[in-house]
Length: 172
Image 1 (cartoon, rainbow, N blue to C red):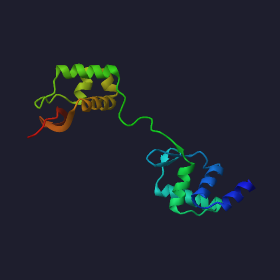
Image 2 (tube, one colour):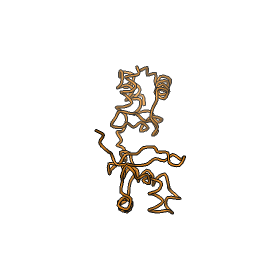
Image 3 (tube, rainbow, N blue to C red):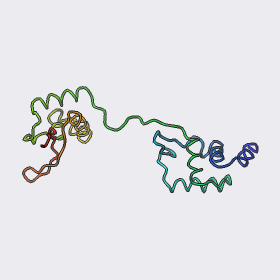
Image 4 (cartoon, rainbow, N blue to C red):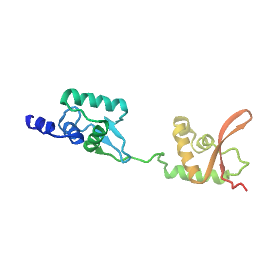
């Protein structure tokens, strides 16, 4: 432990922060970063406030006074790089794709067709699942409709507002 403390005292800047993080039981292994450079502590994105808490801890426990840039660089160097599990969106099953394709064949998209809503499609293809997981089904259906080139817009019908999907039309 004495060897580590002397090595930390001799180090400067971001390397000093890096050494402290690797030798502190409370900090070691708790930092991660993504490919965009965002830093996370215990899986929570770090804010200016959380950086200041780390800076105060390092100053109090290890007598390390680092600039904000040195602190950020030292933390990033000691962080484990993590990849996103999925790049947004929801996973859509083959059955759901086929069901939506069949529904769209029966109800072809047109500027006059106001029946294409995620809610109506969800209840038509699987009413039981729609009652249990309506929001998830709406997100999956919206992803499929976007993939087919349809655009959504808010429409008022009979005094009620609906989010309807229409084919993209070139305006001259």
